[in-house]
Length: 474
Image (cartoon, rainbow, N blue to C red; front, side):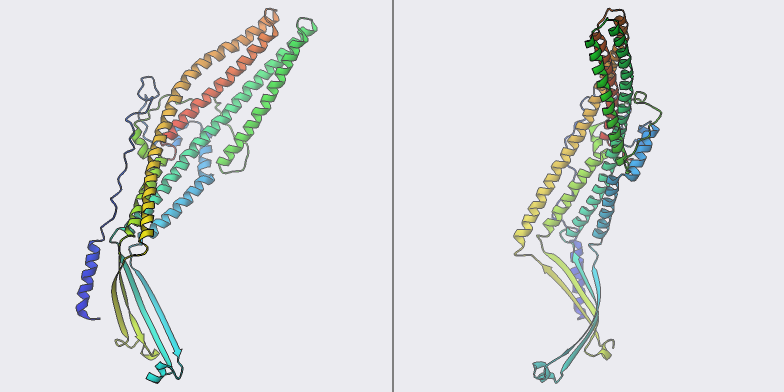
């Protein structure tokens, strides 16, 4: 190669490197989701927002107090299949990210080839050279490098990074949801236990009342209708017990699967449902914290960043690509001269500009599609923020109103429990009929079951607020 042309090649390389910082799209900036400064319901004096603001960094071991529940969550995090799939997605995205970081590195290949061709005696080669066979031996290094003038490679790397971060946040979101699902499932199981206990006590009371009515029937104090009504009610309670026991088995199976094991019984802790304290003081902070605390919101933004970078890649494909190719090695027509240096040495350097012509329509359509995808991901990001804010507001309202409801139902249940004893005494003295006894027992049962369910809802609302604010994945 002519030495006077070498500086020209280096000038071209410097020129390409100087413009390699160009990009056909603007740098990504987070869109304004338009979130308010305060959650609905959080600015009321009597709301649950009386504690220090929640930062989204409270680990579930510090939030939940029941050791049995914590052990179940630990087992689910270790064995849950959805979480394991999310980890594999992270591993895959990590490898793709590593691959994208190598996109701007020149490709270097080494090739060795040898050939021997025999010609016809009457071919032009044989007639002109007198040779009937031609040999060619070649060993060379081939170097190729594409200058990232329009940011195609750089935006590809950004897209891979955004996808990796999205999978990381997606795993956190699965983790958060898993913690909440296990907690809610465990509370449901304790609710069913409480319902079973209350219903069995009512069955014993109903059977005692039935025995008393049979004695009064034998004495001619009540009709057979009273006995039949109480018998029917007793059978109805027995049916309810079987239904609750079925629900317990189904809930235990669901929790077992969440923990990544075959359906089996779930061990209970020492605390009953009524003994588990509900969260009463929990400040949600400001909605802006959702952008940094909520894994699903962050994953939605990572998807938007990926789409934005892919728009840059699609845009860069509309413009010319600049490549530098070089080859150097040893070449000879005889094997004995193959490595006879310096005579067998050769070199080749070439710069090329490739501009797509007939593919412009296809590439431009792909660019427009990438812009549509980018706009769609921005809408999904804004929707994720809205949903997150709604979930927090819903949980705040639930915590506030369920606390009021529980106090009222506690008083109701206390009065109805007393009315059962009063009805029994009045019935024995003949001052009340059997319908009043049955009604009192039925109302007391409904109130006791309702009280247990409302307490379970309060526990669930606290868990939902914890999850909605971004906790649970630590």
